[in-house]
Length: 319
Image 1 (cartoon, helix red, strand yellow):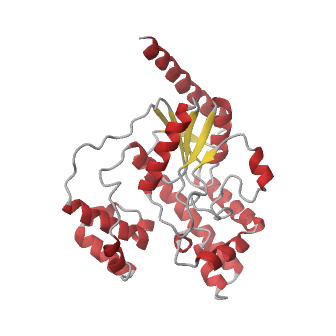
Image 2: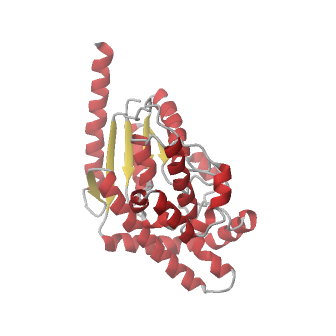
C-alpha cells in the first residue's frame, strides 16, 4: 500500500464532510471507520453521509464511501472484521491508483488497522459465549477482572458496561492463555498521514444539540420503531447511542423530551471519551475546526504529504 490518509476526531466535528472534500481534491475514496455505520438500515441515527437521501441522490454521489451497510443489526461485527474488510478495500482503491481515506471516530478500529494485536483474529468460542450470555454485567465484569485486571482497567467506561465487548474480551484472554503466538503476525505499515480534527468543548456540545434536533426532524423515531420491530432489542440497537435511549419511550415510560435529553448527554459523554482515546493513541497533528484557516491548513498539509509520496514512489520506480 503506498498511501493512506486517516481522519479522526470526536463526534459532530464534520469528519466525513472534510473527507469528501479531500477525496475530491486528491482523487480519493472513503472507508468508514465507524462501528455503527456498518449496520444496514441504521441510517439517521448513525449519521451516514446520505442519511435519508433518496436512491437517486445516492446515485449522483461521485465519491465512493465504503463501510456502510455491510451487516444487519443482528449480525456480528468487530474490530477484526473491520481490519479484514478495510485491508481488502484499501488494496482495491490503491490498485485503481486512488487515495484511500479512512474516516471515523472509532479509535480502536484505526489503531487495530495500523497496529493489529496478535489476538485480533482470535476465533469465536460459541460454547463459552452461551455460558457468558447468561451472566449479568456485574458478573461479567468480575469474571474479566479475575482473568486480567489490567486489561479490564484499560477498557473505556462504555466497553466495561457493554456485555458484548466484555464477552469478547473474556473470549480473547482465554484463547491467549491456551494458544501461543506463532510469531508471524506482521503489522500493517502503509505510508500513512493521520490527522485529527477537534473543537472547543462548547462548540462540540452546540453541534451535538443541533444534530440531535436535525435527526429527530429527519424521522429517527420511525426508524427506531421499524428496526426494533424487525430485529428487537437483542441486537446492536440496545448498545447504540441514538437508539438505546428510545427503549423506555417505546414502553411509554418517558417523554420525547427525556429521550432527547438523555441522548444528548450520551453524545456529549461519548465525544469526551473519543477525545481522551484519540489524544492518547492516535494523531499527533490536530486541526481546530473553528480556526478560520482550518480547511486551508489541512489541504496544505495533505498536499505536502501527498506530493512527497508521489515523488518517493517515482524515485523508487526509476531506481
